[in-house]
Image (cartoon, rainbow, N blue to C red; front, top):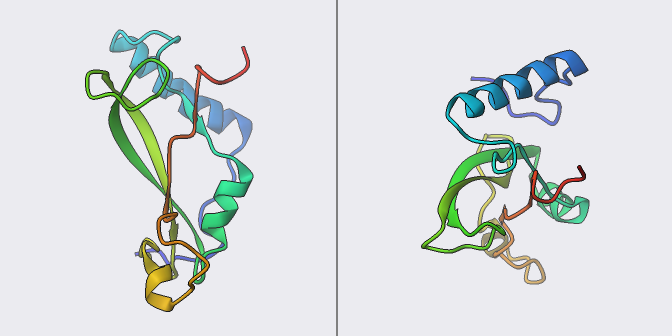
Length: 129
């Protein structure tokens, strides 16, 4: 198993990044999913991400693949269609998600309901054309 450290991962060059996202889009097109509804990415604001990164013991973030039923505007709706989403959690040096830990270590001013970040802005719906 790889160690969970602050320098995990690597930066990709533009070509490798484009190849990977292109392969994803090609597969979605093969499945009959059009560009206007294919979720390509999800944006999260710096302040929200920093709340996760600043958690005691955090060495990085884990990105969880998820789905939920939503309407066309991204609002949770049980009658909507399943949409891909990502969830971000802080991770400690042992590879464990940091969830609910604030209550355990007694930081009374840090609410324990901010352990998972989700519902970012999806592209193409919320991205510049």
